[in-house]
Length: 264
Image (cartoon, rainbow, N blue to C red; front, side, top):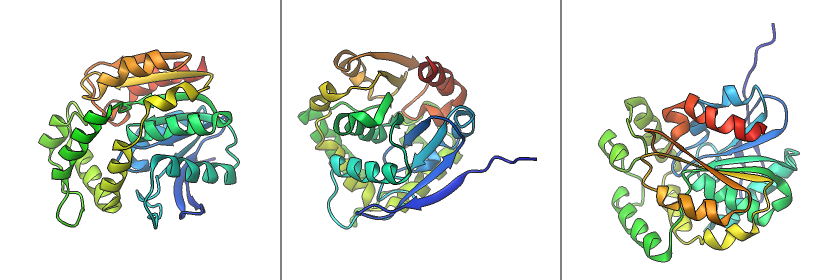
């Protein structure tokens, strides 16, 4: 009997080895995780999606089992490293789905390497003006200790931050683990995110179609209309009763919104 298994491996980039999980067969689907997490963010949906696509879930450099960059890294740097990894893995064109900062990275991939993307899915994508970005960066500073390491988050923190509408202990434990694994790179990536002008990149997106997706209670939903109105061939969907990482909170609802879009 054939048993489906995940392939977990690393691919070299000029800035360090990048870890990924590969599963399934078919057209490539590249999956990019939120800030302070890892490929863990996709574990609840990768089995189902791999029935239709070759799924590649990457750990961004500095996160998960990927190596830590040896210099300051901005969002375009992350995109160049990811594209290098994808080319080595023969992912010359694919669908891209990103959550949170993963959505920002997917946006930069679409803007910098338009020939690489077919469909684009932006889940819980932050859209901040300079004032809001500065405010969010200031707020986030309370989440790190004197060495810049991320503090543990409580279920109350996750609920108030709308990470999840109804947080569970196992999700909190997993996120505290991945945040500790990333260490100072949680804050470094947050800083890069705060200095990224996503609106200026939207006109460069040439994806065949884009889906803008938010959980209903996600506090980043204020970016919904800006993305929908400024990306060519964009549609939007809001998942009722869910937070910032809907694929963990309700995998069935997430897949129910994602698959029809990808298969259309």
